[in-house]
Length: 159
Image (cartoon, rainbow, N blue to C red; front, side, top):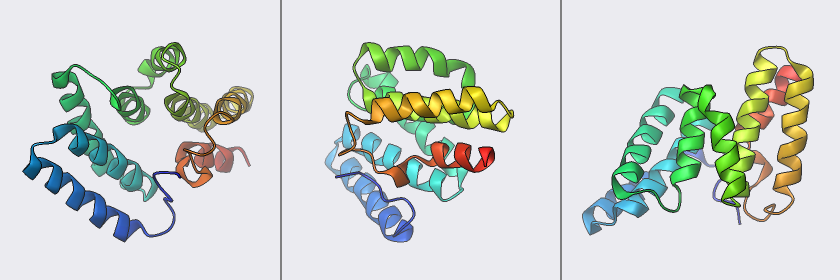
């Protein structure tokens, strides 16, 4: 089941994840706090709150760095790069492929498609969206189409 259904229940999901972050901190489980923070950032980004999303992702990325990485680190770095430093995306795409992380691969490809569409480069945007669809075939049970905010934005720009 997908982590997010971004376009429905934003307030409830925000409240739930905010409480999860607080509870994880109280329990001393900072990995769960970082994971919840990354998911909350995805919700805020989808809602158009890029600044909050960037802040949450920066906090999560810092925690993963201090903890030596692990589950969620690559996804968090990819989401953050899509908002802050597109030059990192090609290397993150290679990392995702090398680590067999199709969710992160889709996130990176969608971000690259959005960036290409913003530049008016239809061919590149389409190629990235098609590659994301191929990667998505292995994880359709994990990623809901509504979670693919950058893919939606790229398609809107191309239409």
